[in-house]
Length: 96
Picture 1 (cartoon, rainbow, N blue to C red):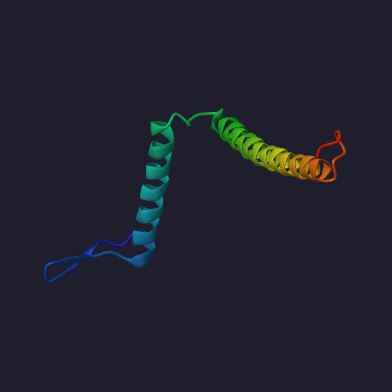
Picture 2 (cartoon, rainbow, N blue to C red):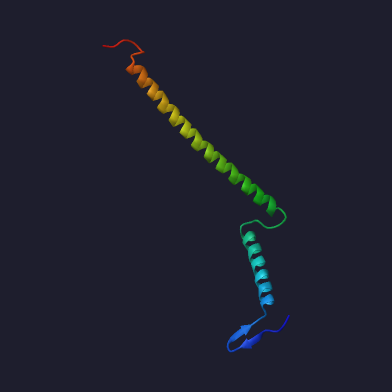
């Protein structure tokens, strides 16, 4: 580690030392952020996998609900058209 040098009012440190300092700060910040949301310790990886699995399940349920709604609407429209056709052809009794 070489000592920092001062140029005018700026302090200069070697690039490698600066990058190492940034890496330590980033790692410490990431650990603090995970600790703030309760994802620290030995079970953090399992918790994140569980959260991802839960999100996948929510997406699947949402997709299935949309598909079911589309199926119901489509079936309703087809039944309405069949009923209209049956009435037009007078299949359910005689009329005038």
